[in-house]
Length: 431
Length: 202
Image (cartoon, rainbow over all chains, first blue to last red; front, side, top):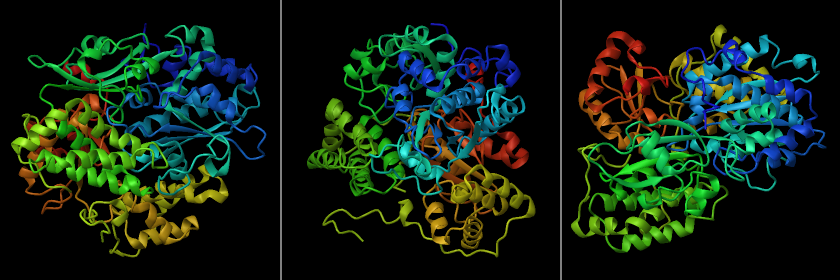
């Protein structure tokens, strides 16, 4: 499949409005304004577009759940908090193709009857925010957003809201809390944001890549879109390949593509002289796949059938120099730091898991610690308000399952059995 | 304190345990920052001014480098919320500093993809060169070193943020040279963030 979302990203000035207009820019918005909002939602439903943020929930259905009869204003909240380790696709889209997102936001607002969209961008993407805000200014000046868009009578404002360093803000209800000026901590669900969202108003929260797909669907039709991929996995998909590969980067493909094609073909495979050990296919929160599973189709359903999740399509490749106990320790350091602190099992449990993993990695572990790891994990998963708890225990459980022998070797020999040259020479204490 | 028989609670690391002691100098926005604040606050419904707390705090940080208790009171007054509600936000988000930081804040990404490509060694090189540990500022007040979690540019690992700018593919062997460059050329020394970097490399 020819790239669609990223077709022009390497060309100079791909982020300007003039460039975008030369490549069918805002044609989707023009089409949408000639349809009724319900027709737009129907088209998105028919396309089978599934949310690109991680859960893979059908976008059209999410929009249909928005309570249109509510007397309150409606909102679009675009999730540009991209913080799942191994994920950097939205970053590329916003940096090199920001008008695609703006057009998607405007169409989404029209479809659900919103007049305002907030793009919640992570605090570290300061330079991306500038590009996006400049693009929004251009779109205002040319009447693609603002008052009475293209003479249709439809009004739509788009604002960028900068976060300040919190992974949890990527969870949809935590994102809304953060937008309201509070700590990014999740809300209990239900009610879902479609009914009670931002400022207690009906809200659709959509990922950047999801919204970037909307103009394509409205421009070229739902059938064209669905036919790009396997059944129920239509459209183009952005894959982020990083870790131990020769050519890390964002690769666009249909979801017919296999993990092998992405890792060995597009990304060039592992460095010379090394062998593939494992793959995390969907950001750090999903179970590991083994080299024998590389021919798995990289679709939502394909990866799920193989026992993992496509998630945010952040593919992290690990070669034979990677110690799996170290890997779990590295990721639990992340989850411990990013736990929002609202639910006790997650707030305390991630710290316990980290400390035990660190102890084993440094050679001070005992065999009974392995049961402790499983026990604590079982008391976190499913016992928290949001999916963070389940995500946080996944690196522990998946490495224990597939690489339990490495844990045992650490404990038996009283040292890390695989200390790679790229790691710290003098491992520091916890901080 | 811990109520668990064997496992001590982490008393020092968690964001909810940070305390604020520095009232700082009396604080008010400069006219320029005040004008910026007045513009930003119009993006939100009039009865939802609190939504502007993050941009308001960024303006504080731009003005004086870090966020003091007096600044929180100022922001609280402008937003019509309590100082405690502002502190609640400041103490949660890792990009707000409650202590003075160096001219250059170096945030080294330590999460998986960067670590797989040598981020731990980058941190070690910087620590060695400056004689500080992560979280500290060097004696000259030029550099503050932080270890941060995934920055979202894993294809250009290891990534280091220098204040709000990005430096990509920083190899451990080049870390010391980057520090020297920063002293001489300031933020012009950083690579910036662009996806053409990967083309240049191949």
